[in-house]
Image 1 (cartoon, protein in one colour):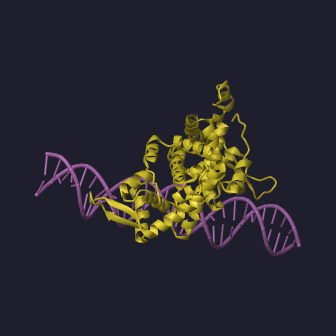
Image 2: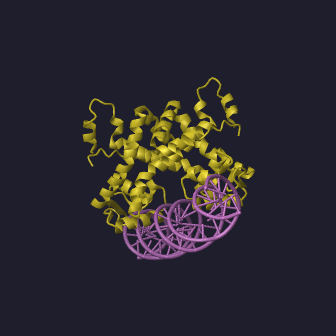
Length: 172
Length: 172
DNA sequence: TTAGAAAGTCAACAAGGCTGCCATATCGGG
DNA sequence: CCCGATATGGCAGCCTTGTTGACTTTCTAA
């Protein structure tokens, strides 16, 4: 459907924000913003011969210490072979500790070591700094809208996962 | 700085949305939403033995026909060697037309063929469908906030580029 | 006219996705 | 106690898409 036709169909409604052109702007905004979003941690990681995959693993192990390989797999949405490669280097390098499960000895419970915690903090602080600046600049109402649209964009399963992620209520 | 300390520092201000926990939620929302954002085109691309890089090239050639390899490079933020490989397959497969520049014969001006236009439309319609649903669900005010935060997150140079991108004012 | 800059191409390498297949340890039900 | 299912790890090999380095063609300014 062309924009003009679409607009015709919306007469009397406040739906101009749904034109193809508006949607394309949103698509481009996602592309450019996501690139910026990963840029700061990527700089740190490159120095250490790690990649984004390592960052993601550290992030989710940090936020839910003791989670199993299978749970991490589900959150990250990659294959175990792919995760395993990343996890192995993190364990070898002493950033992640893999302990045999207490309930179920087949499981491996993942924790960050103190070195792992330090790197995670360094990475996430770099990422938070950018996010904080953007949030501050845009204001609380914009932030609410930002989160609302992102959530609406997720697949239902992912959204449930996202919403189930507990608050860390830290003093980390 | 810990959350509690940060919150202490905000007494009397409405800045709770800047806590580390809120920022982490935003970071996770970006991760999950971006994965969903690329999922639909990825399905189509996989069938055709193309990747996300091909999609991005098609997108920006579509939105600015005749642009040169160097300009496309600047928008995509990758090396020319990386782009070249993608571009070569698109040209070989007859989706993109590369014409020697008239002013400067070193330049290549890129256009979509009709086949390229068709694929671009198919890909972007898949992506727009998801975006449209998210926008409709969240409402115009949320969409405004979404765009505001994404723009604030970009690097200044990228933001300038993004804002300079012309409207397509279509009937494509 | 010639040196150097700029645009684009080719070659080779690495990260990190993927699939397929197999081994090991453990669990739980019959 | 045994047997099928589950959790994990490892190996091989493939693909896409980043990277750097070296090269050609073309343009421009000295």
